[in-house]
Image 1 (cartoon, rainbow, N blue to C red):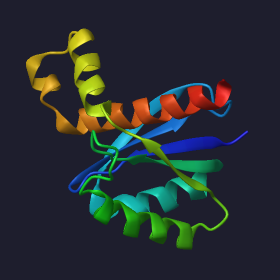
Image 2: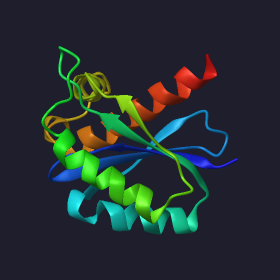
Image 3: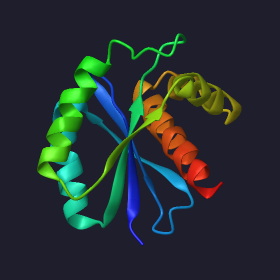
Length: 138
């Protein structure tokens, strides 16, 4: 089987997570500067088999798309143009940053590590992917 990539897209940096080849477990991969994201994904896909890409869909509490969608949509269009054979799907990402912060707290990380925004982004991508994987199982 192939892997699934999840993206927690941010204006400055983007968290990336990847599944195992059995598509059961989500693992944080890295955080990259957003301006390097497309290059990073293309490079990763050239080395690893990827079945699909999941992108966090930022929604507000009233279910409307958030302001960041104006940045995400052009990226997704470019991704689909460069890799037309790999499906790209959106997954609701509401509360992933809150859950990521709580996870870091519960893990007992030091204050300096808890303030690491890149780590929060990577964990958020992992939560997005794990949510997707669990939704496909049931």
